[in-house]
Length: 447
Image (cartoon, rainbow, N blue to C red; front, side, top):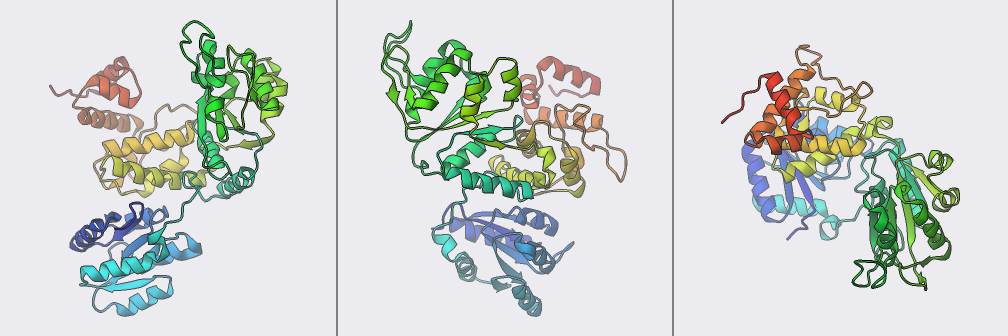
């Protein structure tokens, strides 16, 4: 049986061929996706998330040979490509081999031929797929390549790291990647959201306490430092730590000793510390909210993550990545983005960064019924003057933001069977606002 994480893409305009191949390969344990649209197939393949691609030579809109040339140009993908061809196109298939195809299947072919071709294409990949430690950091821009190289170098050390960047840029993903590439990878990675800790219990949460240390401490408890011993502790939004705890944290970093609440004897720990914040800590120091000595202790190696609007070349790669995840999760029919939708995604400034893009793609997979995402399917929440996206169809000029929002609300209402509370929660607005929009847009509610 094949490994579950081996993904195969079938691009063929003949539905019977796609269905037959999908059934055979699914029974073998492969994860199979398919499309009959050549342009959609190209977009799906360019995400570089497939191990093998079955590619038909003759298709409307774009030939398989042209797709292959684009895929293999400058090593755009790592997948092995198997050409599927009908009688009379062998010469084309031979040419495709010169462009990097690894095998040719001539229609009609038996199931054993298909399985054999896939097994040969997999080679050693099928037995033990290589883990990509950067699989969660999507993008191939110069910025992303530099970021990955920086992470790779820093991961080899035990230096304390401070990750800065706006909300939603992926600071925890960077911290986790640092851990997974380090010598501590087999030990715990313990993330702590400092903004969610109750100030009165913050010290106990971080350092632990002994039984009877305070009212309600009915038993001895390990803190996050003890849990992360020999591993990595990630303090997210460290600027939210109180001044009193900042003093003790400074000592922990200096001495590698944890002052458990209620105990006079500190405990030795071996923790690699990574901190993160979306605030300017230098401004926090000027205002007296953050200690200067602690700042210099945690920022031995700084990493700044750029907002998504400053590396737009990665937007479509990230969108395609999440499209695959949520298409599968929600059994969505979406396969690719239209050209207008792609331009819109790139043009939008993404104030919520990768987190907002992720949520936008998930909404599409929940609400859209078509195979191709069009401009009217996309709705950007929290828009302001500094974060506008093109929502007018450049060809017809008929689509307005009002049209898009109304259609999006109608789809959400239908999806949740016109339940106001569930729809409002999904849309990220309160029920009063939703009812007002329903009234203003003249949306009819089915009883």
